[in-house]
Image (tube, rainbow, N blue to C red; front, top):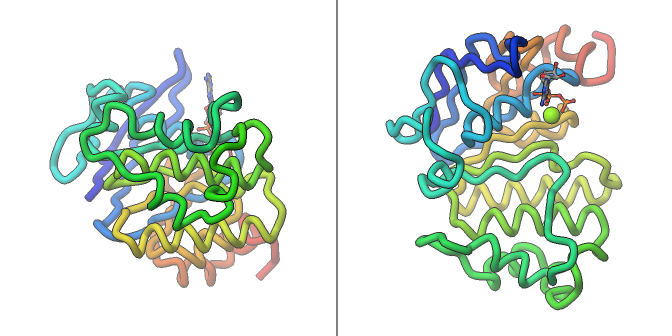
Length: 232
Ligand SMILES: Nc1ncnc2c1ncn2[C@@H]1O[C@H](COP(=O)(O)OP(=O)(O)OP(=O)(O)O)[C@@H](O)[C@H]1O
Ligand SMILES: [Mg+2]
């Protein structure tokens, strides 16, 4: 579904992505792991058109996304849940969800989001700023689903959450994928991400250095010592 081919991206004079290529197959979950500053967030921002790529191609079902403004990338079916969630704190849970469907022809229904996230259903009239961190992450994902995306880009959905909440978020990401949404997941929690994904990429200093099945990556001694927190 998604083919990123040799993209290069810079902040001013500093080239951050150096010929990054990756693919995400329709119906799958791919995960992108790597150290702080490797370029994971930049990769997602390049796909969603928030930052420009100087060269390369980004194809969604064959359609070129490079050069499209972000709102057209969303209309093409890509929805990006950024690091740090960015919900509207003064609006209610339901109003936040409605904002996610705003201007989208294929809009989703709050009840579909509520069936995935029962905790949000209970809090539908609560101000979003009063939710816990995990509930805000659920809301950010739920709001993205309101645009009925083909491809969901998730940037560190488990960041800063308590272990039980991390487990729930990963379970729900799996559920969303089983409902037919293709997912590119960026995570620091490499073990949980690889356990869920169908394919994995490892990024270092703006380059993809490994591309393999999650099982092979988990068995790779370099990956183990760098990202899985144990020596081989
Ligand atoms: N707005 C910016 N201006 C200049 N440089 C930036 C900007 N945002 C990121 N960078 C630099 O680009 C590189 C890649 O950053 P990026 O945020 O993509 O990494 P990341 O893999 O998402 O890291 P993290 O795990 O910390 O989220 C880093 O060297 C970072 O310092
Ligand atoms: Mg990041």
